[in-house]
Length: 269
Image (cartoon, rainbow, N blue to C red):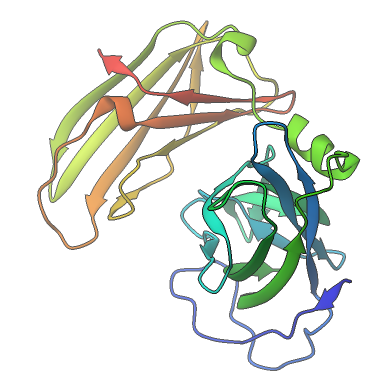
């Protein structure tokens, strides 16, 4: 059953759009868990479905400098071993002159679930913090729950379509050498990434992510030079500490008008 979500307003620092101060926003977002099916390998595929009112948007896992990344808390679930989101390809959105990355209208976010006890049902309970924006930006918390039966094996076509709408692997997109040069800057590092690949179409965007949530990564402008796409990002530890960069942990996503590609790791220049 679709659950109406009441917005919980709060202060968002650093957003391009203003923060809402009043509450006529209860219909901006509807959310539910799609129970999905149990796969032959014992894992369960479910999904979180978000319906946004016209003009509203929400954010991808790496939303850009002015977005709110989603956060998932599965405490309270039963028979839950692990959860892995499968992110559909996002779009690039202009938010008051600032470029953010996310989704509009409707998004189905598949969740690959490993039950703690194989062959048994899972009771999924989720607390999800995310942001939604239109003319205002609102931080919200979704409280969702759903029983995931162990005896359903028929795939949900809505979830399978969302899984198919993923960024390409490097081999699918014709990606060649991926280089990362690293140089020190005040209080951090500058990462210069260069990806050999055909154009993904239109104005391409390169997003750099690290596996350490304590490292803040800026979003730099991508520039194409023939068969290479180049971008720079600045990296800072949130506590101002010194840190080392593991190039194998660098994740690069290139988003174009035709497709996106997900690249894991890079080599020294």
